[in-house]
Length: 119
Image (cartoon, rainbow, N blue to C red; front, side, top):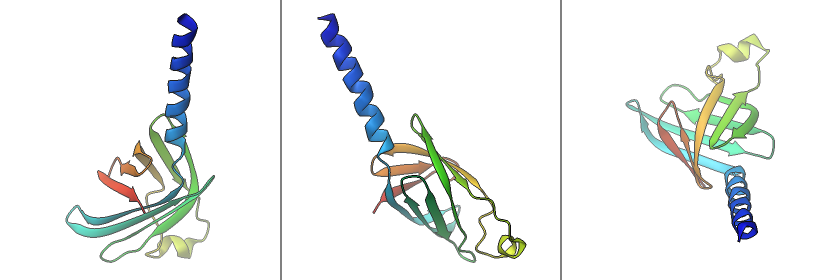
C-alpha cells in the first residue's frame, strides 16, 4: 500500500512538471491596457524567445532567453550594444519580465496584469 502511495505521489509530481514546461509556442494579447490599445506577441522556442508589442506611438521588440521556476516564467532580453537602436522606438526599455503560467494555453504578465493566450 505504501509503495502504491509513493508511486501516485511521484506520478503526480512528474505530470505537473511536464505540463508546466510545455510552454513553447506563440502567444498573443489584443486589448486595452492602462487606457491605451495594445497588442503583445510572444514567441517561445526551446531556448529563446522574442516579444513585441504595438502601442499608439511605439512598436518595441526584444529577443532573449527564458527560464521557468515552478509556475513563473522569467524572460530576459539580450543586451543591446548599438546606441542608435537603444534610441529608436523599436527598443524595449524594460528588459526583464515575469509571467505566471496559468496553463499550457495562457500566460499572465504579472506587472501588466494581462493574459496572453496561445494562438
